[in-house]
Amino acid sequence: MEKTEKILDVIIIGGGPAGLMCAFYCGTAGMKPMILEALDFLGGQSAALYPEKPVYDIPGIIECTGQELADSLTDQVMQIEPMIEYNQSVEELKQVDNIWNIHCKSGKVFKCKAIVVATGKGAFSPIKLGFPGESEYLGKGVTYTVKQLAAFKGQDVLIVGGGDSAMDWTNTLKDIAKSITLIHRRDGFKAHAGAVNQVKALAESGEINMFIPYEIRKIEGKDKVEKVTIFNNQTQEEKSFPVQSVILCAGFRPTTEALKKWGLDLNEKGMIKTHEICKTSLPGIFAIGDATEYTGKRHLMVMEFGEAASAAGAVSTHVYGKGKGGAEWWAGPKKKRTGNVEVDKDSENKTGQQNPKDKEKQTVKS
Ligand SMILES: Cc1cc2nc3c(=O)[nH]c(=O)nc-3n(C[C@H](O)[C@H](O)[C@H](O)COP(=O)(O)OP(=O)(O)OC[C@H]3O[C@@H](n4cnc5c(N)ncnc54)[C@H](O)[C@@H]3O)c2cc1C
Image 1 (cartoon, rainbow, N blue to C red):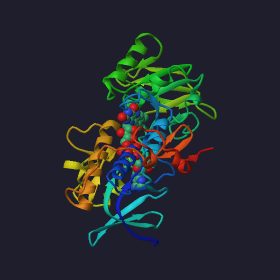
Image 2: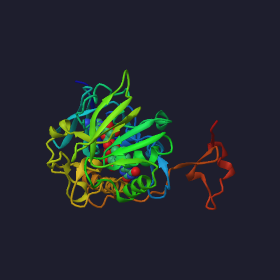
Image 3: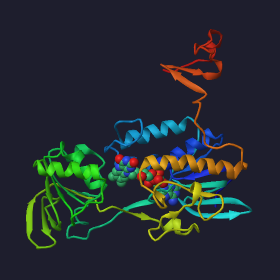
Image 4: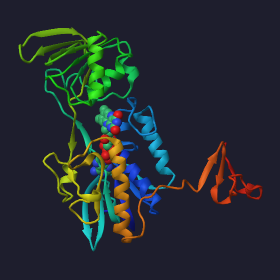
């Protein structure tokens, strides 16, 4: 087994929005965090599951896509120069003499004083609905995620579900697809009220079709999806119509298999129970983001960014002891860019004008 002998202050498991912001705040508190990410890219769900979906609820950003958010968070955290290890899926955590040993599937072992678990929903696996044709047409019109909006251009699309994803894709694809039909198996939606109201307004104005309480009976087609039959689960009445794409939004099951082996207190849903300042049931292990649950928890990034700052402060206290500082507001990067010129802040004079004698410190970017 390959070992990384250096003992780091803090390792963050998961490079999604929560993990990235936690690394950033660890940096502002004077630490040099490492991020271990199972995938070969950062950004978590926003990059993996909804790269082209608009996001409207990040403070200070009126609208951006999931990918733009992931890119922006990545750029932000890169300013504090974290260590990043991609393709490192964490399997086991072992404590030896107060030091945590993190064992990855790759065989690598990383050592640290504190861990922040930011594994989100873990390895994403979609909940299957089990109707005839679901597996057969997967990738041939049936999908659980939307990676490229353009793929639905001019198509008749069926969207299934009553949660945030179903509402978001309905609202987002309505101007791209030829037609949208939304079905949901029961009256009442789990999604945010704003998105539901928008979908209901579209249905009332005839811009989309909406059938409740309906489920899929079967999908048919030669080599790819061509037709769907849906049924009213109260009356059994059936309707058939042509579709080229079926987006199934029954949710994703968190794969907590790895988490279960880590010895953390989990709730009945497999989520980490956290206590004050993101502490878990194990010393030196903190948890944030979608992986956690506590009373009042909302699975919104804005809340998870707050947890990221809290956890960074708690890590700082754990590693350096009380009074040694925590996550603070930041004075900005030592080097800042003005136009295409990178300026070392220490060489600026008080008026913000660059001192001409420090000109040689400039790096002109091509
Ligand atoms: C369709 C959809 C739309 C959404 N829209 C919004 C929105 O508009 N606004 C909003 O606030 N929220 C939205 N959310 C929710 C938001 O994306 C999540 O709350 C957020 O991504 C949680 O961040 P996280 O970092 O905790 O977890 P994740 O984003 O899930 O990231 C976790 C990371 O950890 C990695 N990982 C997991 N297990 C391991 C392991 N064992 N070892 C190493 N790495 C591991 C994963 O690969 C992943 O990169 C949406 C969610 C979905 C599904």
